[in-house]
Image 1 (tube, rainbow, N blue to C red):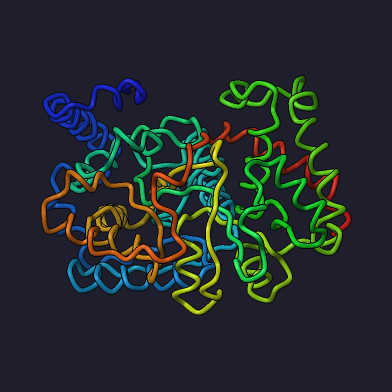
Image 2: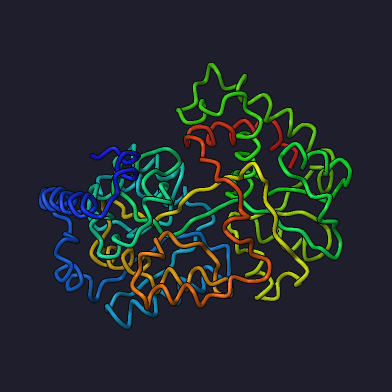
Length: 420
């Protein structure tokens, strides 16, 4: 496969056309061997997909995300005759475990999962255990041509792991903090993790984070790990057990100091981001965070937070990544899953997803390269009064290798989980 870091650097128009052509040839050969639908013959894929039911395993903990997936299902049914069934998950790892169990049992066809919303350690696990459909399919989708591989290289690497066309990008994410200007002085907001600890000590009981392995809570741990580690380069590599205690010691020293001054003295934690958001709305917390720059505007638009809420981020950078959809190797409706993945990558679906009144999830597309009508969809979006402009979001901090989060979550539970 291509070196994807080099790939993003060389992505000029003539080279792009050549690479995509080669990717299509590689996919065609692999698909023939694996008896998978070939996205290079998109007409045949659409014909095969018509009448199929696609079981989409995706986190179901957000009302606006669920509504967006329902909207996508309506469009797919109308235009392609594909029924999209949202199987709501609390934890994506459950879907990974299902596919692994089916492989162990020899169920190599007719699997119960057709599409998974995925990234990070879950993708790494599925790739490592050969649980995903043949490499290259994502880069052969018709709408892949719109993906922004130059400015958003995480569409090609997932938490440092090369994607290799095993999953299709769906949205961008960046850690952003929120506060209510009616209660909190903007001039006193923290500018990094150390500042947040100092703020929490000065304002006891007014900050918390969801308990890992909740995704939002784990993201906070990664932010602190990145800021406190002595050498960030070590996080690009798989965790070495011999070095884990030394490397992670600053993180756990930080948490030891933070927990006693958190909400309820760190004896309990919000279950997830929606619970944390409700605590801000109820006046129990003063600073919260989410992995979506438009989340505050979305919550205001939906009446979940007051219109005095605003966003802020750390000038030195916050965690950022791309999230994807992937097709299990034994999916029963592979053609239907390809059609769904391509629709989710379309300018229409991406623009709707970026609308804070709908979801507010940033696009993976190169908007400036879209056709005029598609660019107009994005230009018409009102990103909301609490959404920071791109230039104010600060640098993006790369995700650590997935193995770090697995090990950190285990150690977090050993140290703090028994108290909850």
